[in-house]
Image (cartoon, rainbow, N blue to C red; front, side, top):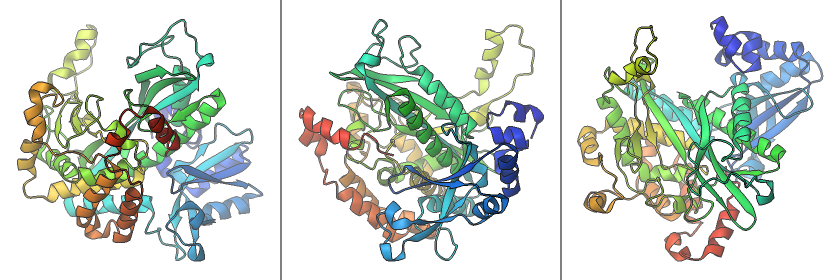
Length: 506
């Protein structure tokens, strides 16, 4: 790792150990603990509610530290997951050294590490969502030769008492996109979160205020977004989980609340969890060719995800209020299609930096003297349906399955042409094109039915087990929310109660 990269890296362990986090060893962790006065360890792992749990250790001596880092610890799986029975509930949680970071909130110097689950025989827990994601990615690589990188756009609302807000500079309702202070009220909280996430190992692309902002009788609501850079699937999932936890901790310090709920109220912008993907082969992008043209492999990957998109909502849109967001005219997808730079599409190919775009810097800076380079490697494609209720590991596993499925389908390129859109399908003049496209599920119940029909695709190569899929289907059906949006139309008090049930989802 270059010295300059170490100096600029905000993670204290990277700076001190002078190596990337992916190369951290147990000896590195012990050295950092001893040399930096660390007194406690905290193991963190994902529960059945998709939130990080915590198990803390006082470090007694070096032998104790070595043992904890070598063996992990036992936990009660039946208290973490509904599907694990009490009579066989013991699980191991084992730390992943690359995830180590100094806890920014503890008064006692504390090092935190994310953990993986293992069963009684010391094998990765078969029902662990993280393990399923790893299997899905391994199968993708083995069967096609391609791999997937990903990142998330984390949207959230800050909710505060109205009395806390300076009303001299009010933001315009639903016009908060990229607003700056003083018209945005919580940009400092967002910036504090970005720095803390970076210091914890997350690679941040940028942060900004989002469209949504409004007030009601008691509260002020402001929507923000933090976007990550593309990285390996495992790292993308881990860093998102840490990021969500950090935001909640900071919100508590600020005396406000943060919510990743997909919908706060009807008629206002909802919060999504857009997933950007990049297809790779032999460590290099296989998403676009020189000149910025989308490759056939990328088109096939996109079509595979579209073909099972209804089922993927079972992992990415897991609560009834998810489907209050997936409605027309809210920049949220409702139909199964893809397009370039088109926010009415389910999968969008954003504007890239290839071809003539490479000369922009010379126009903005006439004294620019470096050789111009193509930046096509930055190109991604974006799955826009998921929201903060997602099980991030299972969502990425589902997108891996979709990618593999598309690369193996015989008619992928034909379907790519059929499902491509180059218009805003929500405009009246394009209603005929809209009518040709299949709808995404409109409820948890419909999501469950879609997954039922396509279970075999997810069970290929033993990625998902039938028992796990049946459990997900049963849970979705238990909401009994078929046609819920229609039933709730105009019933604002009932909608408010439903939203409150899931305000702290994920």
